[in-house]
Length: 82
Image (tube, rainbow, N blue to C red; front, side, top):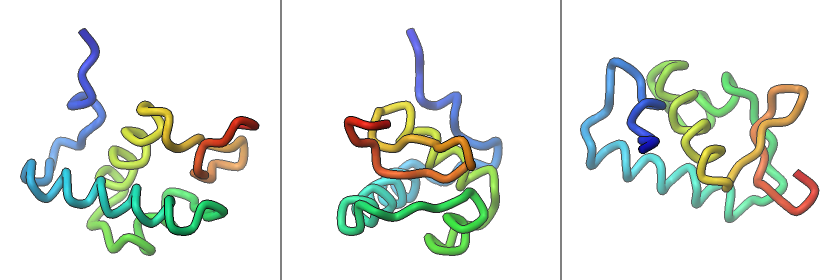
C-alpha cells in the first residue's frame, strides 16, 4: 500500500507540527485560489525551514489531488484544467 510518509524529509517535523503545517498550507491555497508558488517562494511564504520540508508538503498536497505542479515548476490549486 502507498504511504504518504515516503514524501516526508529525513529531518521530519513532529507529527502534530507536520499536520498543522499541512493544514495551514492547504488553507492558504483555499483562501487565495489563484496563488502560484515555486518551491523557493513557498518556503519563504510559509516560513518553512528547508527545501526538503517544503517539497514534502507541496508534493503531499499534489499527491492528494489538491495542488498541481505547472511546467514552470509552480504549485497551484488544482482545477478542472490541471
